[in-house]
Image (cartoon, rainbow over all chains, first blue to last red; front, side):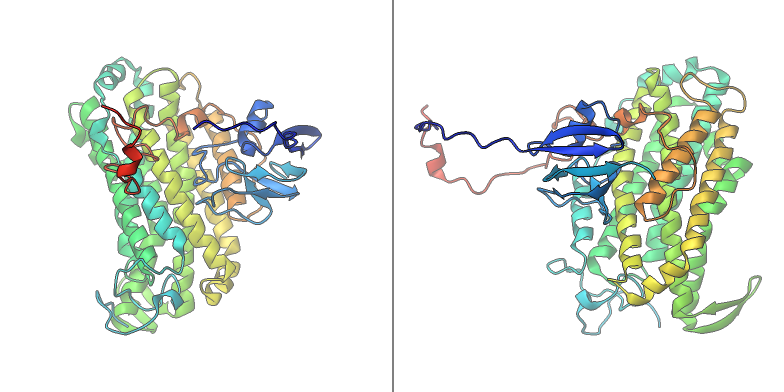
Length: 98
Length: 377
């Protein structure tokens, strides 16, 4: 389908959030799940299914908001997030182990 | 109370607890107390695969070229996997079906067990392909001391629960003198405790023991050896990840009290025991690692590294069900395992076999004639 292109409204500003991990800080967008963005930043995260059923990529969420476009099959404990399918919605702080 | 294969009572199954409520009567899935189990069933069905889809002819040649101590590692690992799936292919059915009260959970248990039987059949497929006399290998599973030690710890909670449920179904509540075993007390709290510990030990089996064996299988494939075997293990690992999620849901539902308030009290009382099950399993797996590598290591994996992986994966799994971690290893010593465990590249082409997003015979009924208006022939 061709769209009659109106003069483009100023593009919605890309939402960028900070992810704090120990002393590191990574910038992420809302376009992709957290896992791929952490990997691109060179951070090793455990994973297996990458679609929300295995919970291997469960990470502590110390504060901040994430959402899941599709409810994952795995149990997400309170205070944790599933990196493979979580979309970051605010600045957040995460941690791997105590 | 005795078990009935078709409970005649009229009741609302969405008000029943997962276990020890009414026996299930109508297998209906239009209304569910815990829809997660229905979703797990659907996912598991979409994973369906057959061992024969994987060609193992190169593995036979690879196996013959392995050094003797490497053959020992490979075969022992395979025997252990065979043991684990022999137990898992029947025990959830035998132990849990007589006491389950929700149709969706009943069917999840059956679906879960069935998929374990595919795993068992694939071990036969592997063994038949790499050795001339499979009997030698299968016989050793019941006689080899290192394996039978493991058999005891993976089956004892199931066996205990089965024994208690048998008494409960025939005799009801009370204390019964069982020949050779002494008095066994049957009460609802005791039954629920036995159930909770069983699910916890299954969780440990799926979450730790299986992964230790996967690490060994993939260590060969990292060296481009036994790759057909690794392909099968990859399919098994995908299933196991789902089973693990099922058990974690059961444990967390029990502990939260949302399903059965009495179960929450029992789960809280059992915390120390469950923690001990985790630690004991980790120690046994480390001993197992020593046995595997007793005659020599292989490139990429030795007893020490596998031991560290045991500690690491135990920490991860304990945390997943709300426990404090108990080992110092905080990093995965074999990060390459993730590339083997990842499920989204299990198969390259949907028509070759199942990938999770591929449904056989799927048609789109929302099309009508107008959708073809743009076509000119």
